[in-house]
Image 1 (cartoon, rainbow, N blue to C red):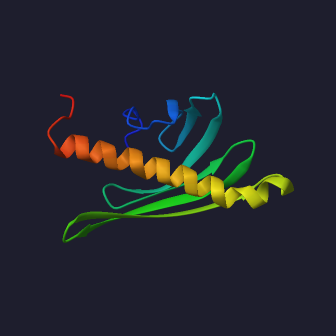
Image 2 (tube, rainbow, N blue to C red):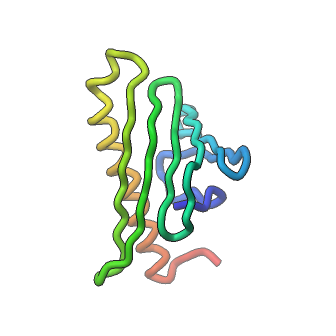
Image 3 (spheres, rainbow, N blue to C red):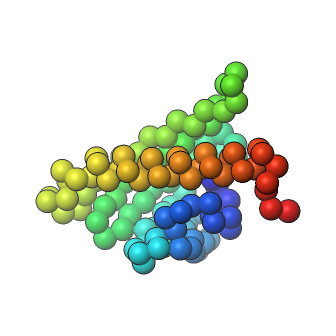
Length: 119
């Protein structure tokens, strides 16, 4: 998740541009760019960042926990639409994006744990 040089598991991204240690830009396959600034990075435990593009701004945080059956990822995301008419659609958009992200992540974890990871 935090390796910005290995993002090919994300089905929605064309590329990620790393600007420096705390800033990066995700470019979607449709060409839309979102700017991120990492605010906290505790490897294998916690990752948080702010995000902004032409339509929204907000923050995201993910906490990793060991549980009996493996691992748990708890994500908290708060996003505000920049235009008043977008605000009613933000919640539905976030749910779709979160589902896609988690589906992609689970597929990648399964690929790695099944021994199919690239060398």
